[in-house]
Image (cartoon, rainbow, N blue to C red):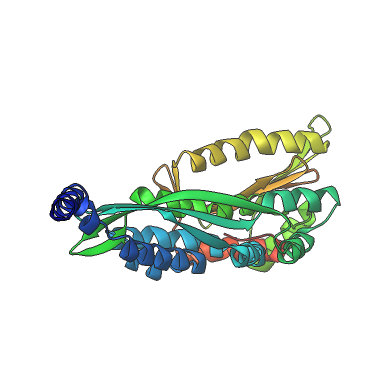
Length: 331
């Protein structure tokens, strides 16, 4: 009996020496609570709540707010964003939690689920639906078409407190990638205007003193009209062939600017879409060091540019007023 007792005590001692450190080093309960708080903040799209549970959150607050501000300016897609956000849920894999107070590091696997907006877009487009149909389909989907985003949430301990460590906001941007993706799925929502309508809009916005150039002859394959003044440039091409308008817009306007947007050579707000039969780019930001505000538009046989390099609000209001007068989206 005595030998058995001694053996039992020795065995327990060995186990404690082997596992004691990991037993008291783990802090999974606290880590899971922080990750749950973080995921809830992500679903609410609340930048302030997100940075509150992030390591070095103050360094990311401006970027996060700027991201949300840029895309919430897109009023055309506001209801679509909201429908996707409302469909989002998350599940924390508690068994994946790993933490070490000694190393001050932890990690937990999370899966976000949301409506498959790209599949919904394809279905609606195949049925010749419009933007309202797209939004209705997103709201009515009720989990029939979903996608999953699987992530590992990293944490580190600062001042005895666990905080999410999302370097460069990689996890954040991955969840909210749909803001950018959906803005490029949007239907353009504007109609071709004539040179006469351009003139009327100029007169309405600038007054009777406006001057513009007009060019057309039998040898040309387009008509051209332009206005230059008050640090504002507005011009329009009406092509004989819609395919030429599409090629000109894509080659001279869309490709270069969108490439620079994607390569971060353009910094600021942008929204764009190109289907081959219509397209647009609206922008407000820095392009190679210059303020750039306005847009390029294509539909039917028409290509139109309307922009300024000025940061003055009075100049930008001319751009907004002209685009509003012809019923086109503003930056």
